[in-house]
Length: 231
Image 1 (tube, rainbow, N blue to C red):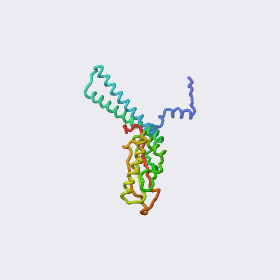
Image 2 (cartoon, rainbow, N blue to C red; image 1 turned 180 degrees about the horizontal axis):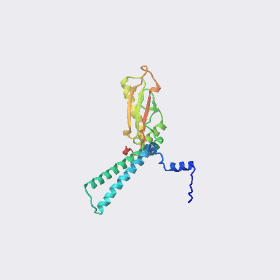
Image 3 (cartoon, rainbow, N blue to C red; image 1 turned 90 degrees about the horizontal axis):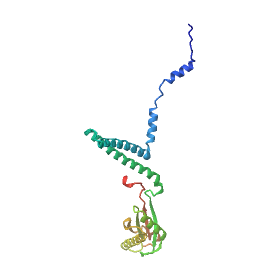
Image 4 (cartoon, rainbow, N blue to C red; image 1 turned 45 degrees about the vertical axis):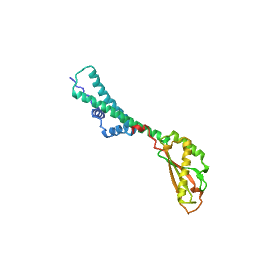
């Protein structure tokens, strides 16, 4: 009987054998990609949402078990309550992370803890009635404070050095009060305002100086955040 031998080319044989070799594991690379998917506030929000769904599924499964009067024990009850608590915890964490992500998206459209100063009114020596008022600035700030109740403003008043220190202190208080009332007339709440009467500005005594007979408004815009109650 004739025997027929089939010889495979060496390269084909090697390829066949290599096909049986398990592929190389890339644990580090895969871990890195998984971590990247969960990175940042949005990724963390999705991660906590997934955990919440898993825990909620466990709790609902046991709840259905009870409703159908299946056998249960103390360990099952503990597992159910723990799963429900974990679901609530992860859902809240998911909401927090989502709000942080929204803040990062929206905050550039809002003031960021900004403090700005505005010259509001100028006065003649010894007078608490402004002879020059920045009506547009005062109206704009008054409306802004009205529509942003968490914003605040400080009204800061000075005098020059003409007159006594005591009378100028009283004069600066009157000037600050006059401008604060203008802001309130434009919509600002009294609770948003504080006054700071600094009296005489620095300089030579008994010297008239128009730059010192002024009331400034310093506004503070709180840092913008979404969902402040969840922070």
